Image (cartoon, rainbow, N blue to C red; front, side, top):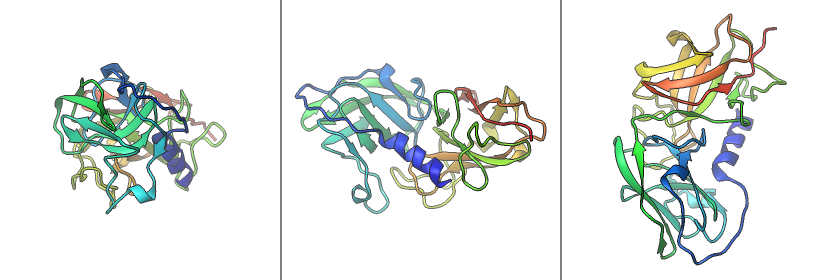
Length: 261
């Protein structure tokens, strides 16, 4: 699991880029996306979210241990703030062209203005829609989901999953948990999603048995990261497309490397 979490941390904390500008931050509703899927559309409370644009920051900065106080993510990073409906969001990464942030967990479904504040300059307010859940699966590459074997190693075409195996799949946007995730806090315990009865995992469109889903909730040690622990069917399709549904909201389909022995 360590390698998978390192991959996820890299995705959330971006890559280095440096630029300087006195122009106000620029972005649009269409450039605000689910950090896992990179797809715009409905987002979710406690959802990991990315803004793409220009002049978003004067420098590049990823969150570090020194930025986390009392187990709470920062709301200011390199002089940058993001607001969702007037509420400060929690920041993972800022750069001139990208910001990764966490939507406050206590917001309700609805339409909210989002804007970026960068050291005295304010970007335009743009509207985003929040749903109770907006699932997205993290990607190993453009086509493949990030999942791990029971020993924590990453599922890859070279080390595929097997029928009947227990695996962990990583996601964003699965919504509220019980107990409720405190805004911006790193999760310290497992907390299942409240909408567990509405959760489905499908392989090539066929649902995995509900009893085979052991856990769907936050990942301890992270803020806004979710995992789904499940046992694969004994006779699944080879290299299927996996999707996660919460009610009528679904993730994009991604390949799960899976072969028969």
